[in-house]
Image (cartoon, rainbow, N blue to C red; front, side):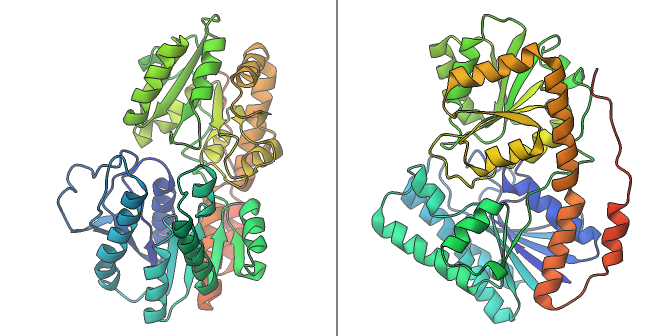
Length: 430
């Protein structure tokens, strides 16, 4: 099958949707499909075009069997609303020549956000007479409105119109959580048009490893009880809560907080650490992908943090990672949201009130004092990840979806054989 993936983010960007779409594209190639990716010049999370890609309109690359066609982006490091609009428009217009520079696809997969890119993807579907599948990673513009990124009423109405247009003209819509399904049904989207395929984790790559490892030693964390947040640092997280919680626990020298994220955000957090007196917080830049398993294994506790105004169905991609690593999770998240629901369902963590440093500190202290509880949560989380978030299962679900929209059948024997393969168990007690 010829598959065209339209995704603003892709390798080598280290966090967000890029690693997921990269794994999906390469996984589909391994299953025998021909995959072409239309994407922009890599820039996330720094919002700065990477070295080697600057000043260029088009670049075509090959990586692990995937043809990657990159195009120009008009990008600003500190964008306002107009800058964000111009960014999306630059990608729309610059990417179209790349989209036509290749074989006719049997199916087009588009990731949202960004929302406006749904317009050229649907146009391509019409011209190529092929189905278009929307992969909805966030509900826009609703999510942007909730956190105050979008306030202009005219812009909101325009984006809502584009949202309705996209849902109406897509052949199928894949969403990442049941909360997304409910939201779109309430907006009038036919439930028969949608399928829920959760974001995944490579459970063979991210797995329980001994916490005493070279990454821990390199960062002088030997003998410490490590509380870790790793990933995107944006308006929706509110990492100030984590720093304030660290300040509450600075009288316990064994407890160290580690925040791993983009350098520009770390500069702002460093000032907050100084203001709070949180000298037990280690701030680190994003790590190379090959270091991720040992980094996550270093954590005694993994953090999921959201502000109280975050839209309830948001599903952080960090949750599958932490559960797969076999580490207990503390979710400082809205109790009625999707993140809390998944953590509770997994049995792999504790939920506390969002934006409450006291509650977060109390949960960390509980796990610090109860190693048996921490081990139980970590074990349950790993088992849940094996059952719900495996990459193999996600690939099969996407193949089923694509075969459905193009009217093909995939042999069910492949799925049975893969699901019957034994899963390894690793000792994480050391």
